[in-house]
Length: 273
Image 1 (tube, rainbow, N blue to C red):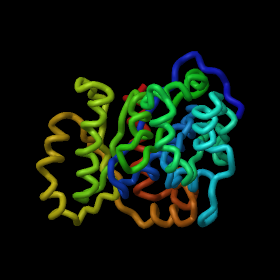
Image 2 (image 1 turned 180 degrees about the horizontal axis):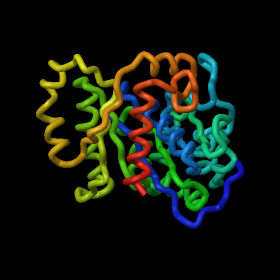
Image 3 (image 1 turned 180 degrees about the vertical axis):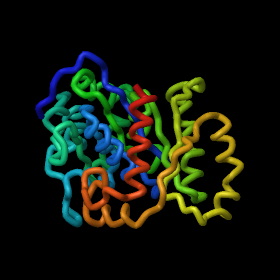
Image 4 (image 1 turned 90 degrees about the vertical axis):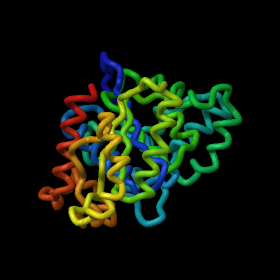
């Protein structure tokens, strides 16, 4: 890994939802790609054992795992051998010289217990791991697993900003409702640097949106809802099947979802600095 040392500290963004299917990985990879395209040195940390972001950015084949070392190896070395090999595990992404990835594999799932048992302050493991990187990147994007596990707690602990992605589905909105109290538990109930981005939005889903309107309205009143949304589009599903990041692939240049993610990325650059 070759990086240029920066005088400022990196901005850390945790992307989470307690439930799956909310568009976390698509949002994580799209945001990281946009920031890299804008010249920001960006590290995406795939903290999700499902490793969807790793698959997309490394263009892995079906059931292919990211080559070692991965975040699992970093955690194992840190907890069992008291060695920090994080810089060895970070790799550049071929699409853009400013984009880097710390990949995940399914092995991360069985490391959760070790993080809790083998550290005096389990919620601060990431904080200690990432210390050597503080001046080497402009942005750190944390793609969290779809739960409220120790990896989510660690990501929230170090995050400057928290983004909850959600669809207009009851399970997804419930995932936001479960995640936000954990944010306050870890960051303090005066922490307000939280935003909710609605993804896979269908213009026709008016009945579902009406049923969820009360809670969504509370989030909007609290200032958490982003006005921009990411539309549901077949191009996103096609890109996922092709292991392609829509921000990099010319085939998706006219994609409405891509344009929406570009709008969101521009918002992040303006407001989360």
